[in-house]
Length: 398
Image 1: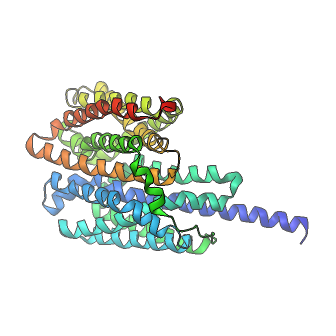
Image 2 (image 1 turned 60 degrees about the vertical axis):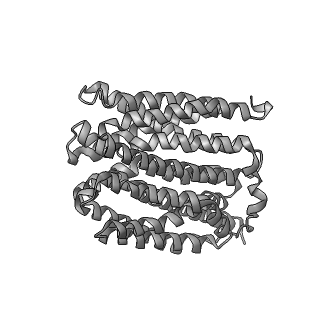
Image 3 (image 1 turned 90 degrees about the vertical axis):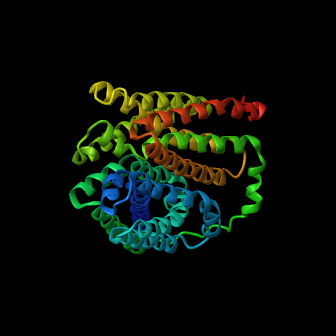
């Protein structure tokens, strides 16, 4: 083989890896959007199925608790399988479950449609970034992994508002049909364009699980649960807050959520900078900002720019706490960091589920206008946990 032929094959291989990583990143966007999309659809979905918004919000709880309970063991059980076939299977599951959601005519059928993909989501999340690194090679592994996480971050920030805008144009069922079609398309793209990657060794879950005996790690996981409970007590019902409290017209909700997500990009950047200095101090900073922003929402609901500033502060703090919490938990252990990271995803989903339940109860007992206060109270509870977490840190981390 000539030097020119070898170089040509190398360029082609790089292009193939780049395309595969892009497909994985967009797949990650679709998969995580499937989890969070429903937040923006709650008011319309509740009206169509003739259920309360607080009951519809429990679909968020169901998805989150399923991810929380089954994420680590399922990822450990399945991560050694052929990745190409695994990703195709996961995307076909998402296509089928989103189609089922689109034709659902009852709360319970929709609940089944939410339960099934919740089992597959953490498996994809736990294996996609590693696979991207393998495809790109050692020299570009970091960039490839970052690209996959960009898809996840984009879904968290923009998946909800984009879904809401599609819902306004096509109905909430149309949003699920679109996700079903795109998931099917990505399954075919992986089948057609992704090369095979070497299998990883089966994870010795019991050996890695020794981190669950470490008090400092467990206290950080507990803190993540409370942090995400604070975030999602109000965020789950943000569309309802905008509509009922701030008086935003239903057709404009998607654009407001889009702005919330766009402002959140600032939080993603600021949070990344703050992590480098101290993850625990960054947690304190953004919890304070979160509490202030959520508390100010109702009193300034009709105060124009002040309301927008409060919403922006909430959005920045909300988004910053995603990477801050992930790094804080992973840095609390000296080994088994992948399991620590997956456990934080479970902790986050526990908090998401608890937040959705607390928010639903707050709406039922006190009204939508009290959501910000309830969420801020939980944020203060998280702040009160920080001294305990700091006290349990190994001496070198003090």
